[in-house]
Amino acid sequence: MTELLTILTDEMATVVSAVKTALSLPVLDYQYGHIEELNITLKEYENGSNYDKKFPMIWLAEPFDTQKGYPALHGICDPDIFIFHKTEKQYKAKERMQKVYVPVIYPIYDELLRQIVKSVMFDHTDPSQIKHTIRKGYYWDEQQKIFNSTVDCLRISKLELRLFNKQDCTPISNF
Image (cartoon, rainbow, N blue to C red):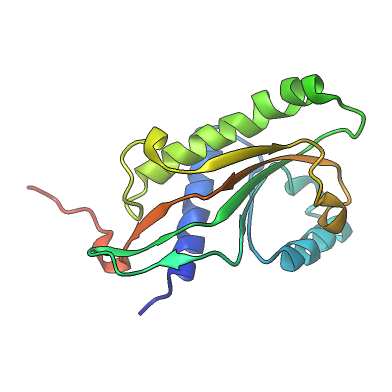
């Protein structure tokens, strides 16, 4: 049986790509894994040609829990997803809202929920019904561990993603 982790990380890559297209973003990086792996990847970015391609970013943090035992579902998982964007250290809250959250982070967040609903892999029909908690991270406190850049973030936690079994994800035609 394919592990939920593989299905979720692969489907989130598809969802993030759809978010990038829907918002006509030139860059929307997608990463998943442990925070230490993210740290290594970002250091590689800074030493290579991908420096300008790291923000905005969606990061699916691992590990996360998966509830099993639901008929027709592969499981319900509760990952933390972070949306990061670069910012300036000297910005105050009002500037962060005007220059980072309103024009970049919030539209990505809204579209991410819409694209989860559109995906045939998830059992969700309304973005407003996807249970989760959000938290703004002005000048994200964990950043010193992983970013050489100053970032703001939106943390999506307690996210209940209901994933269909991979074999059940093909839409059925009524023709």
